[in-house]
Image (tube, rainbow, N blue to C red; front, side):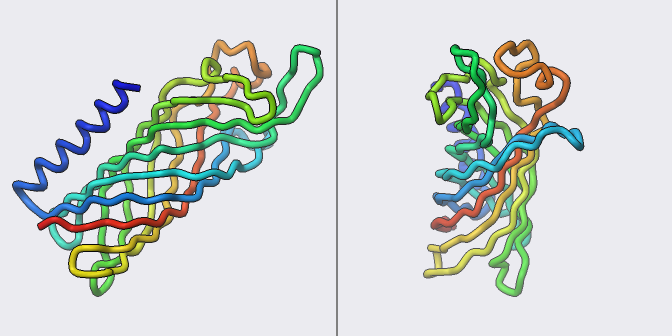
Length: 215
């Protein structure tokens, strides 16, 4: 966890130091409502149900001009999926849900548009570090069954509503689609089919929060 926090600090320090010397910067924080699942990327295979939860996020946004900026962000993010089947010690199969907690760091390019540049689209890579993995029925620790790192592409759209000349309310929707395999290939806990397919994460979130501009 200390290594993850150090990486987070380096992202924000590098963006902040660059922005102070060359342009404007915004800092912000928000909360979001997530829906997530995992995808085997093979048609016809069993599809898991979507899992609902929340995230907390903080970010810094450096402006090159009124059209473009680059954003470094940190999500304290719960992903996961519902309607998993596990085999208990008594040999019976049970349905349960799986919580996957991540510290996720997307770095995105933001394109600002509209007459007042209040709207924006963003896109770029993200990397997520798994901090906890548990099922909801038996509270089993499943962290050893999953790979420690999730990486993929983040995209989003949002709007900023000015409250004064420096303070803004933002509302946005962002999506994260994973590229890396979620589940360890040598896993004996799950059904054999996990070893034959590339399961990746999929997560969308509606976020709201406050950001403020430093000139």
